Structure formats: C-alpha cells, structure tokens
Length: 364
Image (cartoon, rainbow, N blue to C red; front, side):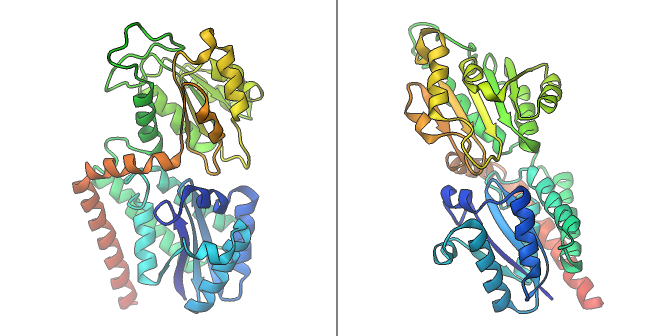
C-alpha cells in the first residue's frame, strides 16, 4: 500500500474555491466513508481547515486512487472536476509522507509555524479512527507526523512569537483602527485606542463570534493583546459564559448581533457556519445604534471562517473594514521571513524523521 494525498490549499486555490470545498461535521464523516469505500482505497483521513482541504488515502494503485479520490472531492464540494483539478496538488509515496510532516509542523500554513495545525491533524486522525477509516499505514504515519510536530515546537523557536492566524489578523485590524497621526481631535470611541506595540488592542472593545478551538484562541489572543473589553457570542450560552469568564469578559445573544456590534471596535468571527452569520444589514443597524450614527470611528470585521461568516457587502458601509483570509497571506509571509532560522531548523527535523522512517522500512 502507498500513501496518496489529493488536496488544495491557500497556495493553490483562491479563498472562494476553498470555501466551496471545505467540509466539516457530518459532511466530513460522509466524505471519509465514501473515500474509504472506494475500491482502490484501504484507509483514509481528511484534514479540513480554514486554508486547506486534503484527503490522505492508502491506495494500491496510483492512477485508480487519484481518479476515485478526485472525483469524490469534486462530488462533495459541488465543484466540477475539470475546474477543481486546476487547483489540486497531488503527492504520492515519499513525497506524501514528507508533505504530511511539513503540514503538521506548520511549514505549509498561511502563518508559518502556527501551532493550531498540530491539533487539527490530531483531530483528523482521531475522527478517522472513530469512523473506522484510518488504516494501519496512515495510523503509523499520523503518529510520525505528530511526533515531528511536537519536536518542532519543543526544540525550535518556530512558534516563540506566538504567531497564528488570529494574532496576524488582529495585527492588521489594529493598524486599521489607529487614529490618524494628525487627527485634530480625539476620536469618538466605542473604545479609546492607545498606541501600544505590546498591547495593540489596548482601550478597544472586541467581540468574538465563534466556535471550537478558533474561538478560544481568538479570546485568548484578544486578552493577551490588551483588549479593554471582550464579549463572546456563541450558540451555546454555557460555553460562551465559561470562556468569557476566563478573561473577565461578558457574553452577547447571538440572535441580537446588531446590539453587540454597536458596542465594539473589532469583531473576530470564526464560526464555520454554512451561511452568513453577520450580514451587511446587521452591520448597518449596528452603526445606526452608535452615538453619532456610527461613521465617526472605524469598525473592523476580521473574518477567519471558511466559508466566510461576514457579508463582504458590509465593507461598503462608512468606516467599516472587512478582513478575510485572503487579506492575511502577505502578512503570514512577512512573519515567515522573520523566522528563517527556525523554519530551517524545523525542516531539518522533518528530514530527520523522514530518514528514520525510511531506515526502519529498509531494516524490516
């Protein structure tokens, strides 16, 4: 059996295509089962995150496996196969093993070195194990990838700066929220921004609309970067209350978002919902609830969801900026440029773990 990867990521496809291809929840389980039941496949798991969808499969024959997996991904995404193929990359055998190790270590992430991908790969393996689709070869390979990733974070400084998609996005948002240097008068504020490079959110109010680990990361990042007030909105009130309490924050009713939006400077949204969570109409109503009609100070909507949570038409409203995943790639590359030595050290770990695997196979 050989390992085959068929996938697309922020490097190969536009965000709109990634949004359409993204799978989660029951749809993710169904995709795995369908791939597993394909004749050339003996095992599979799927890594689906905000910037990649990758199917890992144990296959007997390359061409038959590639055809089956590609067709199933097209069918589940609703993207015609001919169009989807333009954005797909394929790795096989040794290249597939090296790619998974690099992914788990954060080398293929939009923000190079971010640690969240380690948990996402672990969850993908656990889900496949739960559904009975993993297979022995991929189980062993997954353990190798997790070991390499743990070494990368323990033995190098790849994540020492705490860089991740949330912190990079918040950095961009903070830059949009700064008042002009030559402003004649203090900015009327929901929160009074204070220029502080260590705490760029000092004096600002942050609303986090989200679920799962990304929501927790957003709340922790907002607190670490000095937000004056943090409000959490979630479909499960109990979870929102526990998370808000951890940073001395408060909660908001997800069914009354305009009121919550009216009292904030920065919204971080990361729900993974199938449809829009924040519409342009909601934002317009929120601006109307603000003193002075809402246009006197900016509102930034940082949308980290795939598919996106925030209606892009909201960016046409006065003082409103929408930052999506497509806004973050250049910033992520800039972070990587400052971590060249750490990236090289992680690549060395990947090479070492891969070489050890090859040696063990030859000795068997």
